[in-house]
Length: 162
Image (cartoon, rainbow, N blue to C red; front, side, top):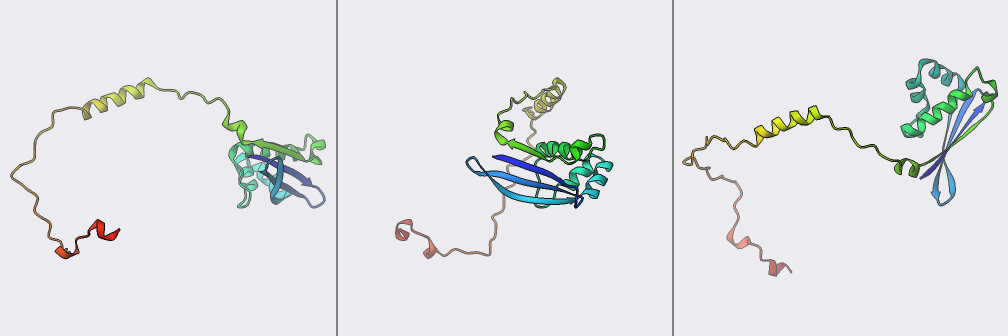
């Protein structure tokens, strides 16, 4: 699925606006959600660190995946960066395509030799055939006394039910 996040900064109202669009029909982006944030709240979250900004931007209605949030947070930081005043008035459009993430080359998992050696010792113990016969063949299981009794007439015939 293709998604677009439009990030706008409204200096007049001191707010940040994030709009989410998704490709629900082929080649057509549909509006899904809009969130408005107080500019002061965003600045305070940025001052407290990355985790705080992440929590401030994610809401009940808009909860992008972590890969998307990294780029969204970078754009928000650029808008509120005091060293780059030209970026303050600019907006940002960020596009995502899930196929880019699904078709990436995946790394082979690293296998640690130490873990393998430890596991083989445990497996060898489980596979030992030295099992002591602690069971007495004389002890039999007592028949269970059940309060339910089935009458001989209630036996079901499959042919009758068809």
